[in-house]
Length: 150
Image (cartoon, rainbow, N blue to C red; front, side):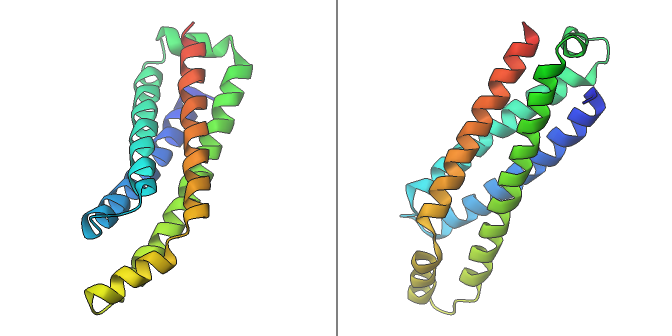
């Protein structure tokens, strides 16, 4: 994977992170006692976005130590590519779930109905699994960036 490809992939994943964070923030604002998982997914997504931003900065200069070092470590670059692909999949799935949830909540006509729908539609197991996947991806990206920098 070339630095330009990494930049494009990181930008795409970052856009998915931001979209998820905006939707999660909206849910938190609407439901003051929202499930802690919402806050945790949003927090972890902010960390992923920060690491992706760092990765983008490192790949911008084709003559940087990071880019030159990537050429000597194809196994780490392949792992980074796999992690970015995993992030893309996780955020695509998360955003799909959030769109479905948000759309269903927006059809509510009164506050109690909206809250009932939110509670009924919130899939704790699914969201906990997504949170775990995001955590793993964040850890992988941060470790891989640090390994390439060595």
